Length: 175
Image (cartoon, rainbow, N blue to C red):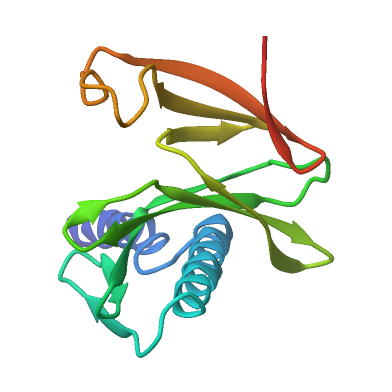
C-alpha cells in the first residue's frame, strides 16, 4: 500500500513539474521574434548612416555601432511593444542613442508598425523624451520640461509624463 501511494505521489509531482519545464509560451516566442526583428531594423538604420561601421555587443546585450565620427547605442531593453496604429497587429518603438564624439545628441525613436505581416519603419522621431510604455494605442513618455541648452535640462524633477497617440504619421499629445 505504501509503495503504490509513493509511486502515485511521485508520478503526480513529476507530471506537474514537467508540464512547463523548458517550454516557452507562444506569446513569449512571438515577443522574442518581434524584438529580434526590431533590433535588426535598428541596426540596419544605423549602418545606413555610417561609413565603415564597427559593431560591438557587450555582456548585457547592448549594441554599439560606430565609425570614426559617430556612434549609436542600441539597448534591447529600450524596445516597447504594443498597439500604435489602428490595426490589431503589435507594433514597436525602439530608442537609440547617438553620440557625436563623447557627447550624446538627441535620442532617436524608431516607430515601427506591422503591416501585412511585415514590420515597417514609418517614422524616426528625434526627441529627448523617454518612452515608458505603449498600451491600447497610447504611448506614454517622460518628457523634459527644459531644452538641452537650459541648465535645468538634467534636473531630475523637471520631467513630466505625457500621453500621445500616433495619428497620420505624427505623435499627437492627448489632452
